[in-house]
Image 1 (cartoon, rainbow, N blue to C red):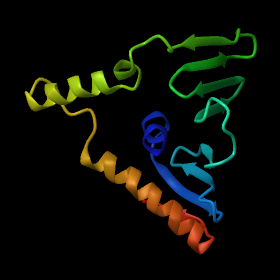
Image 2 (image 1 turned 30 degrees about the horizontal axis):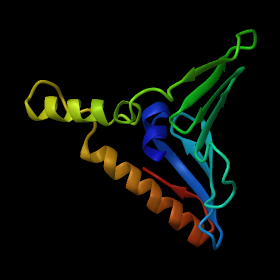
Image 3 (image 1 turned 90 degrees about the vertical axis):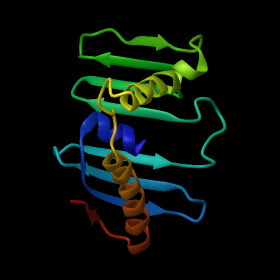
Image 4 (image 1 turned 180 degrees about the horizontal axis):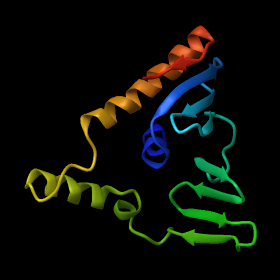
Length: 144
C-alpha cells in the first residue's frame, strides 16, 4: 500500500503511527505535496469481504477499492457513482503479474526502461521502518 500511495500521490514528508499489541496500526501521513493520508490496518477488524479496502477522498470525489475485485468512484459533485468489476479477469492479469513480467522482460532485453528502481523498493521499506519507529517512540518521523 505504501508503494501504491507513492506511485499515485508522490513522496512522503512525514509519518506518525500508533500500534497496539495486536499489530493494528493507525497512521497519519503527510505527503511532500501537502496532501494527507490516513492508513488504518487491523488483523481482526472484520472477516467480511472486502478484507482489504482503499478509500481516497478528494474535493467532491471518492474512490473505493474492494480487494482487486472492484473499484467504485464518483468524480464530482454532480457525477454519477460508477463501479468497475474485475471479478472475471484472470488472476495473473488482475494482480498485475502478467504486465509486471512483461515489463521486466522488456527491460532485461533493453526494449524499455525498468518501470521501478531499487530506490522505489527502498522507499517502501523506509516507510515501513518509519512507521515502526514512530509507533515505538510515539512521535512523528520526518523523511527526507
